[in-house]
Length: 505
Picture 1: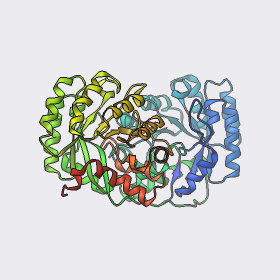
Picture 2 (picture 1 turned 90 degrees about the horizontal axis):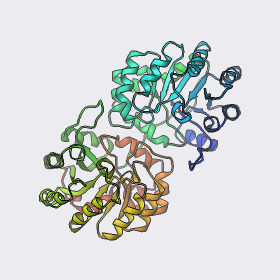
Picture 3 (picture 1 turned 135 degrees about the vertical axis):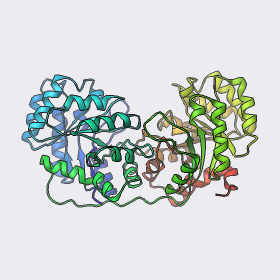
């Protein structure tokens, strides 16, 4: 299947970011069989759009598989001149970064630029920001004559994006951050699928995750073909950005034989997607070869601990493939002992879930440390979503204070992979990492293995908030050996949760 990637770039991300050289962009596109990928120099984003566009044009001339994208910052005084210069040099794809460059899509300068690009038949793409940003973008560009692609539509923006696309036919959505289970299929069915296009954020982001998100979504074959390349090709040919036949073709991913997911949920997240029952959860996991998942209650994390834990107790009794975490509230340390004793009478509760970020109690707080004192005698694994500027030091101190208690660092950091978490795991034998995140970076899993060892890495998805296939891409990108894959996808978790190995499915 031909894949056209509308969200590629190259260059340096300043202030501690990881270099993403042109060679990495080319290598990733070749590795996954991408027929064509956009290229935009990060120099144009962070420093000077004239110099950055020169780099992009030079790269595209040397490498025919690259589609050059012009970067224009409306705040630079030569913005109009740069648009004309890029158009004269044949560019028909343009990208804008309002939040990163600190300007508004309603600004007159931006609207004037988009109108000129519309007159030239060019395609405009804009990196989406927070909730409401896609709606504002659609309104601001509605009468300017250019198709506009919202890049990086995230799960918390799905409702805003669907409504904007329904009202404004010039608006398109790019897929690479639609990592929530069912979000891509939901978008494709609620709006015109012809306006959904593939992008990856490569090479900064794992291209495998973006590909998996489309390959494994609940889509008809013609919808998948359209999203992967057909829709983009229609846009690009209409703009004059590309012509002729495409070359390489991409292939579906190979899934691991057996997967043990240590990070799942039951309940409803605050977004426009339906809640899944325990039976639906178990059935959908089979698509990804997930044989076991340890789940916690969204209700318990968000509102009522006891009611949510009871909800999980019913689910894990009904569904043999599901096991449970007991959720504890750091605001009720005194009640934690009773809740642990109550829930652990059910031996299908196999661990504890703590969420310092949602509870507003940082990892190093006295309340979190006190909860570990209650948990430690049970010896059951703790999955913790860390928070606080000193979270890595704090969780290392907690791990050393409870050396026989397995502790899993959710998301391999505070919502996203962080080398500080990898280094903490390397310093305590009871710290583990799982990589459920919609903020991945290319190379994170391999870096963690190199620092902490394959024995300390687990698979977690955060299902249904995040799709297991999307997260599997984070691990596939690491080129796991057969031994590493078996350990990370199954064996390490079975050692931590031996009750799971004895559970029939």
